[in-house]
Amino acid sequence: MAEAVPVRCPACLRENGYIAPVFPCACGSPVNPPLDLAAPPVLLTHRTWSDSWVAVRCPACGRESEWPHPELGCGSCGTVVRLPVHPLERPAGSADAAGAARSADAGRSADGGGGGPADVRGGAAAAGPDAEPSHIPATSAAPTPAPSPAALPRPAFRPVTIRTARDAVATAALYLRWLGFQDVRQPDGRPIPSAAVDLRAPGLVAQVDPTTAPAGLRAVECVWLNGLTASATSVYFSLAGYTEDARSRADALGIPLFVMDLTGMPQPVNDPADALVGSGAWPQTP
Image (cartoon, rainbow, N blue to C red; front, top):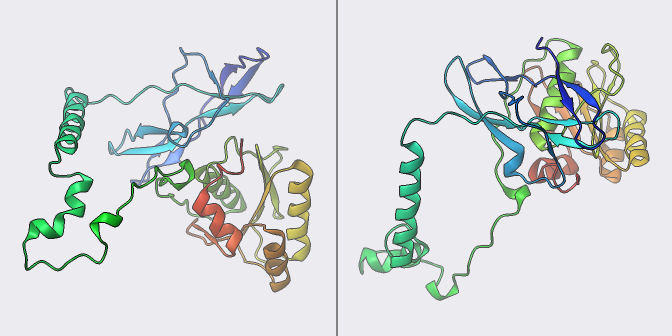
């Protein structure tokens, strides 16, 4: 396991130990964001979707992927900071080429050339009289609004095979980070038992049940009460599914339910879970 590095909170000046998370590359090798320990941590006062991901290159296969940007919650005052990461080294001239391509696209759009919205609307006319007419009139086209941060696509989730109860908890934590929840952790730090395990994050209370029995009504109501007390979103993960009473109660309370198979891929099993996967954590977290 990697050693913890000291991170000083800019608000209360307390030092916190931080261990960079390790993620599985598609080739199976572990990768982790390269922390820039020479730069000070940045106080996180506003979170955006694009700033919450960082590009990391796998040292084994060279694949470039996006993973959650390292963040740390101060254990003393609760301040959340974002840890600087070394940028990827780009091949010489790649940035200039990309900038030139963007300038060329902008010039074509300004001149009415190829690649712009005008070509899409006028495509039928340009194709000639034998082309099939579009069912949408050109005069009805309206500007497309910019997507909200929650609507932006996320990188594909990479599951981790579940062999033990600890694997189930780790997979649930990784999935919650993929959804956008930050600083997901087991609050008490005790060894993982065979019963359900709590996971916490700012704005989140999650329950992970690694047992072979379906989660029941009482379990769903308990996680809902815990979330209500903490003014947080309640989420439940189970390996063996849920009883009918538990699912009905979760639907009534709006609790997202997920079931995990041994491949490590959580699947939503009710409408609140589908909504959470679609929107991500951003509407629920500050």
